[in-house]
Structures are given as structure tokens and as C-alpha cells.
Length: 162
Image (cartoon, rainbow, N blue to C red; front, side, top):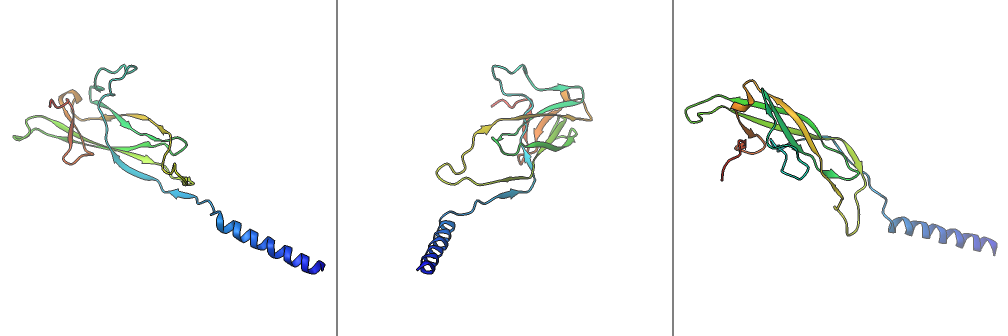
């Protein structure tokens, strides 16, 4: 009798354990490799109540760039990676000097567990602005600045009157 009770208890325990493991999926951990991507930039901060900036940061041969880097709370924070700057001389079709600046930001490697359920993909958003300076060969105040993220590049400064 005791042997029969022990065997039935063991079978019930094994059945319950296998049913529990099949019903509850194991948590999956996803690892994303580091990514470098092209991003847009602005010459001036948007006008806010706390913004002391009245215009772009153009002094001598330096151009200030503001790069947006929003991320999910608790997730990886984007960082400035590098930039490319191409200065264009005057031509007949373009009677002004110009510079095309392309900014790149890097997302570091991260590991996370994807959420399940109705709030899949939702996260508290954090805003972050990264400031960097670009060095030009010609005085920055004499240049028209273009963002190389777009094709063809879009004029950033001076602002285009629409």
C-alpha cells in the first residue's frame, strides 16, 4: 500500500511539474549589439521657457550642434559617436559657401527582457539632448549649414523662409 501511495504521489508531482513548466514560458533575455546610426541635428535649441539660447552657437570656426537622444527609462542611453563635415566652395550654381555636417550617435550593447501582455512596447520616455562642436576651416558665420541626414541635405542655418 505504501509503495502504491509513493508511486502515485511521485507521478502526480512529475505531472504537475511538467504542466507548470509548459504553462509558464521561460523568460527570454535579448541582447542587442552596439549600433551606430545617422541622426539629425539642430543649430539651436527649440525655444522653451528655460532656453537661454537666442540662436545658433556659431563662433569663429566652431559650430554648436544639438543632437536629440531620447531613450526608454532603464534602457541604454545613446551617445555621440562621430561626425563628418564637408565644406563646399562657391560655384556658379551655388554662389555661397556651405558645409554639410552629418552626425552619428551610438547605442551601446544592451540586454533586456521583452515585456509581455497589453503594455508590450510601451516605456516611459526620457528626453536627452547631446551638445557637440564641429570645427570648420572657414569662419562658421560665412557658411550655410546643411544636415547630411537627409538626401539631398536640408539647410539648417540660416533658416529657410517658407
